[in-house]
Length: 388
Ligand SMILES: NC(=O)c1ccc[n+]([C@@H]2O[C@H](COP(=O)([O-])OP(=O)(O)OC[C@H]3O[C@@H](n4cnc5c(N)ncnc54)[C@H](OP(=O)(O)O)[C@@H]3O)[C@@H](O)[C@H]2O)c1
Image (cartoon, rainbow, N blue to C red):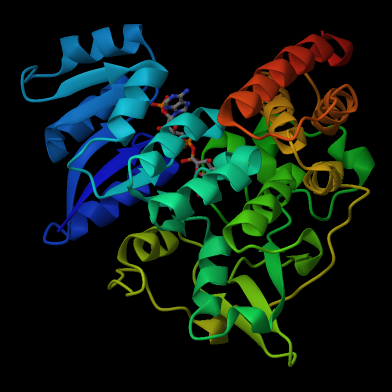
């Protein structure tokens, strides 16, 4: 029986993770839940799973939750950064599922690792911002960091039973998003609703926009570099519109091992929780015969500038990936609220990166400072791209 702390329980990954935890009550117990501001959904989850503690984004949300919760005594309510860090380090917890959206996931995830918890990691921003520090701390504490991202889960599965030194490269697959076949002229006119209409995956809004710009694949390349101890030139990105081959590992004899599956996040979430075993799934088996064709193509880096920016940030290193990530969060949020156009997203990020003098990123504090700096710069830049 594993005691699970789930950070981001009200989100897309969080809700899918709860489906798995609910299905295997003999293997998992929900010890604690963390959410942002969706207090009604969290209150329902508390009623169903009876966690002993929860954390929410701010004091106001904590107040609302206390009002809403039927049994105020049974569940401790924490809030803010401190609250999340405490929740992530609870003594009774064995595994922390890190599924908060964005940079807000870094401090709680780091706190979990420092407290010696195994981490099932969805929050890729943690690895983009501070992958080197996170991996060093995980090694120091002897904890395992198991990916939830379907691509990284595919890599982990494709590495099983092979010698690490035989790996030549990995191939991360990308769906290409809803604008794969669009021209730049067409992309200039797309709305948030168009961009939120992902062809294969149902996900939270921020990662859905990242998939439409292909920033998501850039963030994943940086995540893969740290998780699997690769150099950036060992990472190839290939567009695969069907999202069935979730990624591949190529070995030095040319053998290429892939993991295939339906585009459903319950599969990689379950694997991160049950590794190295595979849990029974309720999904229908993969029917390759009726799918017929699996296709692959090179990504268009001219059209998807966010992907080039992410690769550039990775090669610069230090605090640059944290700056890329923060500027992206600001630009995506501005696009979603109708303030800037879709094609202004890479412009905001690029201009923020150009203003940054990267530091080595030797501590979490240095990384968080770079994140705060980039948010200010990117917000100021938004006015230059204002639609109104
Ligand atoms: N969705 C996927 O299929 C998928 C696949 C691979 C990786 N991921 C990664 O998983 C993470 C979560 O993605 P998602 O799609 O599940 O996002 P989502 O649906 O937007 O959910 C985000 C979760 O984080 C919480 N949250 C947001 N800001 C917070 C803050 N400042 N403090 C505390 N909690 C906060 C939200 O709470 P409220 O809603 O209560 O405000 C919600 O529970 C991201 O890093 C994403 O890149 C997602």
